[in-house]
Length: 192
Ligand code: 6PG
Ligand code: NI
Image 1 (cartoon, rainbow, N blue to C red):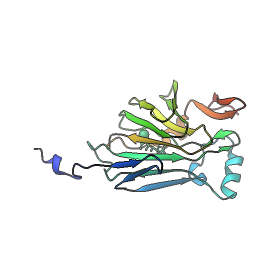
Image 2: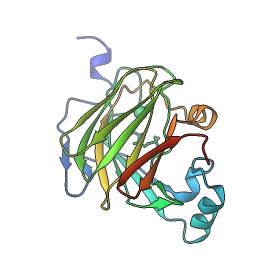
Image 3: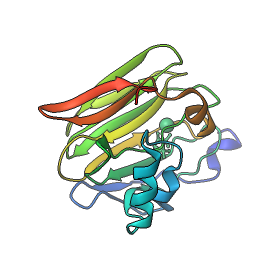
Image 4: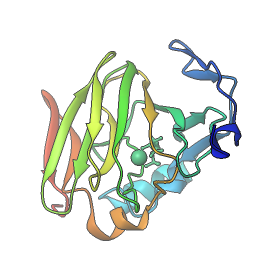
């Protein structure tokens, strides 16, 4: 037995409820409202208006009790509400893991997408219940709800990976995801 194996959480069973998008026992929950997504929507005025018009909850993240520390493997369930702002589908902020490490998502309910960007190339994984999306080390990632009901997915990631949100503000995500006439439409990140 290593000294580490007794710290800081014991072996445990964690149950997830696909209908409620919850983890039991539960850890911290994070709620991101429209005002938390400053600088991310391409139409700044529409974003400001949405903040003024009630500042809706865009997504929430519930975590298990496994902590975000080196060598642990935390999990969380993200639920993104359906919606769009000036045509841009509601999404997570997106981040890079500064200590480059891989991560997996498992689609639980609803219909979403996983947008990845490594600084030059973008990739898109269509996410439905049962799909595992894999993010290799060094690929920034953002999730988008492309359906008309809440989209939930389970994330499992190395606890020491860290979260860098400034990277996306500086480099973008390669593409933006819009609600098109016949489905999802992709445009260059910098296009108006
Ligand atoms: C992570 C996961 C995931 C993500 C949420 C919210 O690294 O923890 O990618 O749990 O954090 O889906 O997305 P943002 O962190 O980009 O707000
Ligand atoms: Ni991540």
